[in-house]
Image 1 (tube, rainbow over the protein chains, first blue to last red):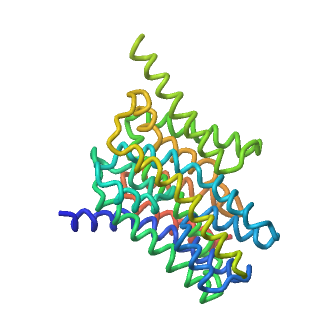
Image 2: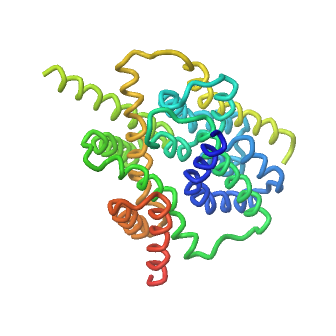
Amino acid sequence: MGGREFSAGIKAGTSIAIGYFPIALTFGLLAKTTGLSLWEATAMSIFVFAGAAQYISLTLITAGVAPAVIVLNTFIVNIRHFLMTASLNEKMQPDDRWKKALYAFGITDESFSVLATQKGNKLSTAFAAGVIVIAYGSWIIFTAVGHLIGANLPQFLQASMSIALYAMFVGLLVPSMRGNRKVVSLAVIAGLVNSFFYFTEWLSTGWAIMVSTLASAIFIEWISRKGVKA
Amino acid sequence: MGSWYWWMILGMAVVTYIPRAIPLTFLEGRELPEPVQNVLRNIPYAVLGALIFPAIFFIQENIWFGVIGALAAFGIAFTGANVMIVVLGSIAVLAVFSVFI
């Protein structure tokens, strides 16, 4: 039972693994040019497992920024996961706290998106473990490979693969959008608000995603309450 | 890198883990007020909107990669294809496109 759920999770997480491949490879390569050893670069992917924050840390290391500031910046970039895990908690089957504490480590933008858009009411811990294991494995292995090879993919492949994670988000969103105006409104409003922050540069990316998500989710809930009352 | 690097990794690991772990462990077995539950249920679709827009357009310096990639992804997804086909199909479309520029 748990084994079948785990395999289904692996299958559902495969598109994440493909999307992580070019990003992790480039991270490994950039880490090498930043002066990190193979083990130092791979250790960051093993212990932190957060794409955007890891990339930014390389830029900050090169700029000679104090490590404490890099840690603080990492916190700010990743605080949006608070919102995602709070939402995910509503969808996961109840389980021992230590198991949930364990798979919480593997919740990224991508694993959250895959888990949260699954059909069905309660997701099993084994399914979540499957999704996370393949995503995490890809992230670690290709970080190391990027550092070892020390070269990037051919330009045309690098450029075309950079769509992978966004295509995955689209592929997860569209089936729920069909015939569901609420889902369309949620996505469109959050996308518009986030674009507004992007072009005005009022908020950094991590905050912008969190604020636009919350704004859209609360606004739509407020509208649908009013609709019910009226 | 010196030993500061390992302290930094430890710090990064802790501050990344905390926002991931607190809701999943702390909220276990707790019933939240209904409006809060509804907002939390709205979050996945709102997150996807914010993750896709506007970043999908800026995957490369050349904005056409983003525009064509986005069109390909939405086009394939609307045919009802599964996620893996959407991902591989979008990559393939951009690979063909990059041969022609």
